[in-house]
Length: 454
Image 1 (cartoon, rainbow, N blue to C red):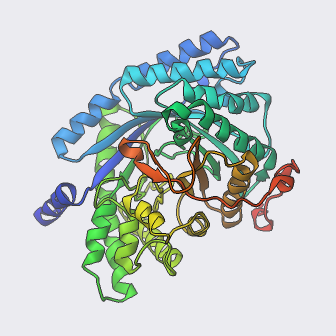
Image 2 (cartoon, rainbow, N blue to C red; image 1 turned 90 degrees about the horizontal axis):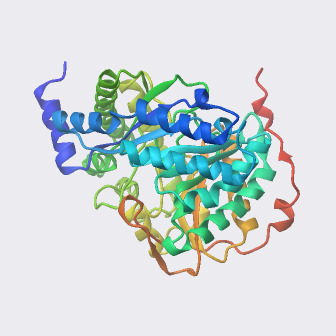
Image 3 (cartoon, helix red, strand yellow; image 1 turned 30 degrees about the vertical axis):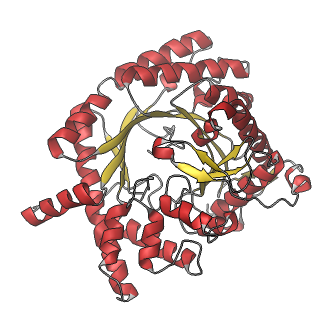
C-alpha cells in the first residue's frame, strides 16, 4: 500500500523538484503498411498512425489532470522507415515523401515528435537503407516533428565504417539545409551503436521489429528530485550517497509505472517498458550537472567526474529495476550540453571539453549529445567522432550515440539558440588534426572477441 507520507512526498517532488514524466511514447508497427507503390505506402502510414494514435494526446492530458503528474511530451515511434519504404522507394525523394507523410500524421494527432525515420546498418546497407540515409537532410529540412536515427554498429556485428563515413557527410549536409534555423535539423538526427528497440526518447526512438503491433513506453525523469535528495547527504560517505540515489530512483520510477499502466489501460495498448533516464531541461534545478556538483565536484569535467557519473548511473538503474519489472530503453543519466544549464556553465568555465564528455560516455547511457561545434568542421572529422563514440559502445556492450550540431557560420566561443526543450549551446572546439585516411579506408571494423558467445 502507498501511505499518505508517500503521496505528500511525491506531490512535493512534482511541485518543487521538477519531477515529471518526460514522455509517453506510442510505438506503432508499420510493417503492414508496406507496398510496392510509394503513394500507397504513404496512404497506409497516414491512416494507421492517425487511427492507432488518435487518443494518445487526450489520454495523456486526462492522466495529467487526474493524477497531477506533468506529462511533458506525447510522442510516436515507428518501424524503421528504411524497412517500411524498402519495396517502394527508388530515390531519396521517395523517402522524403514518406517523411512528409509522417510529419502530417504527427500534426494530425497532436504529438510533439515522431521518431523512426531510421535505418539499421550495423553490418551493411541495403539499397533502401542508403536511399533513406541520403534523404535525411531534405527530410529533416522539410518537416517539423520527424526525428531520424541511424544505427551504425553493435557489439555483435562491429562498426560499419562505410555508414560512419556517410553519416559525417549527412550531418554536415543537414546543417547546411537548415542553416536558416540555426542548423536545427541536426538536433533531430542521432547516430547510434547498439540502439535499443524500445527507446521512448527522441531523437533516437524507433519501434523495433521484435515489438508488438503497438506498445506504450514511458520515459520518466527527475534530476531535480535526485539533486535535492543528494543535498541532504553532504559530508556522508559513499554508502549513504548510493542508498539515497537508489531509493530516490525507486520513487521516481514508481510514478512512471503508474502513468504507464494507466495509459496502457485507457488506450487498450500493451505496456512495454519504463525508461528511467535522468533527462535534464534548461530549467533551473533540472540538471544532471547539478547532481554531479552535489556529489562533490566544482564543475562537471573536474577530476572525479567519470567516477561520479558511473556511481549515479548504476544507482539509478538499481533503484529503477526494483520499481518496475520492465525497465528498458536507455535508462540512466543523459548528459546533453544544450539542454542542461549546468553543463553549459561547465563548458563556459573551461571545465568541460569534448574529450572529457567522450570519457564520461563510457559510463553513462547515451553519448555525445546536443553538442554545438563550428560550422566549418570537416565531414571526416565528424565521422571520426562518430567512430570513436561507436567504438566505446561496441567494446563496452552498451548504447552510445552522437548528436552533434555543426552550426554554419559560427565559431568557437559563439552561442547558438535552439529554444524550448533544446535550450542553447556554446560552440565547442573540435580536435582539428586530420583523420581523413582512417575514415576513407572503407569496410567494417570487426566485432570484438567477447561478442562471440554462441
